[in-house]
Image (cartoon, rainbow, N blue to C red; front, top):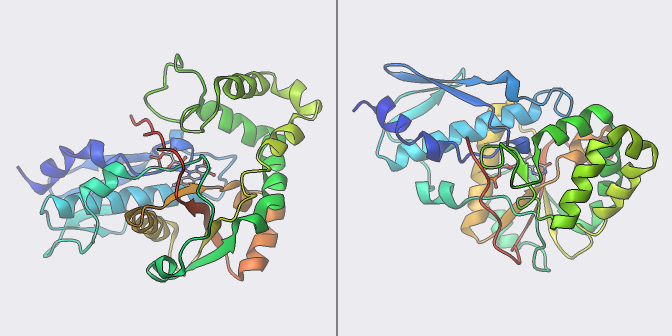
Length: 297
Ligand SMILES: Cc1cc2nc3c(=O)[nH]c(=O)nc-3n(C[C@H](O)[C@H](O)[C@H](O)COP(=O)(O)O)c2cc1C
């Protein structure tokens, strides 16, 4: 088997890469001696992600995941512009293995109290700013209200929600009720609200939903903001994945809250607070319950 065939045989593992709304926008195209990573535009989020930031981050995370899988298989592969995966003289240097890829998962439930140990933070790649979770509690309410109150953004979220196990795409992609840690009642309420969206919006649903997220950051926890580092979104997505895997090695999970950098008002205040351009923002901590394994195509 060629290296391309061997890596292709492990495509399911590579697909464990994270992506916003679990859209899985990557489209690997296999050639004799290279793999071109195309973007599936039908899986982009033009309204919630108009700059393509999250799309690039997701593609970058996929590239890094493929490189880790290749290295663990003993294949000499590197990334090239495109992005593409090409043969290399050496194995990709990484401390991570397939087992790290398989066990990584976002955790949206409650975390143990207490900030992340500074020694762990010192171990991470540069370009991260630590903030106490409570500092952004009120900002999250503003961002959630913007998210649910902006029709095109809410509609895009609705399209990727799988709030009922009978949903035909429940095991394929998108965000399930279980991944979002919603009770049956909460899932039904959210589904009904989004179905009747034009009416519920006028009735102040946006405010109602925003309040529901109010307590999420009201604890003694940590948020990390990943700043642009002169790298492109693909390189940043690779950095993001390495950061999440490094945290996981310390037993720490992440929960991205991208609405804080999507909402123009909170994004501007955040940029000022951290003194840079935020590309990703996530809460970090020890989850109190085992997170669900998300679906993949
Ligand atoms: C660039 C990016 C942005 C994301 N933004 C959010 C977010 O705002 N809220 C959230 O709950 N999850 C967010 N996620 C997590 C994805 O929803 C998650 O990776 C996907 O559902 C697959 O689940 P898994 O990572 O547990 O495998 C984001 C992931 C990426 C890569």
